[in-house]
Length: 266
Ligand SMILES: NC(=O)c1ccc[n+]([C@@H]2O[C@H](COP(=O)([O-])OP(=O)(O)OC[C@H]3O[C@@H](n4cnc5c(N)ncnc54)[C@H](OP(=O)(O)O)[C@@H]3O)[C@@H](O)[C@H]2O)c1
Image: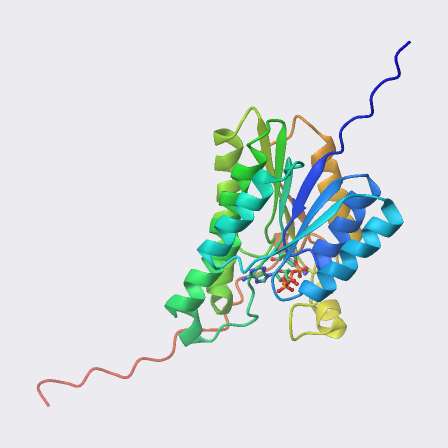
């Protein structure tokens, strides 16, 4: 009997893979034997270390890509490099995210900030979905955010960008079916946001129904579930200890009192 040829390695792209959630997802996919395309922007040196470590420990092929996802030319080059690769990704994990922390009132409406945030967090994930669609049997997982339904004004560009990505997830699931599934994982309370520490994360987690932060391993498990479950598309799984169920609107950019109109009769 002829030996059964080995299955070709599945190939995956993770954007923003040098650190934090992206690096944890890269570790898990490498452990499953995926051939990896790992992307970073400013963390190129760290990404090379992550890639080399995964090659050594898991024996997988890892190709690294550097791109500012706010730069259309760089995104076009990335798409070209991915589609021309002998192992183009059938699994695309849109994880990279532009998040400036708390935006002040001027930043929230600054065209550069708004355009950059929407480009990285919404436009590029939509464009990269097309890469998964090239080979058939593709899967896109958008990493969104469980916190974006709220009218928390100081995150406006980020929240709008992630809410739009959640909306795009369902639309793309219809548009790209049946050859590509499109799902989302919406974290909150996983890692402290930039500028915050563990204490702030624990304080916020104490207001969630489950009274705890969400472990990184749960994000990894959710992506594994979605990847392994071929009948699920257009879904968003919230990994947030139930926080979205109880968080109130917490606008910290409340309307300022408006000075009274001068009385024309006076
Ligand atoms: N951490 C949480 O608790 C939490 C909560 C809610 C949602 N999320 C979502 O989960 C995902 C991962 O979270 P995280 O906290 O691990 O993310 P993060 O550290 O805020 O960002 C991930 C990566 O995005 C990349 N990135 C930022 N701007 C970029 C640009 N212009 N071009 C290319 N790459 C860019 C950065 O790459 P370089 O370092 O290479 O520059 C960064 O390492 C994000 O989509 C985030 O919105 C996380």
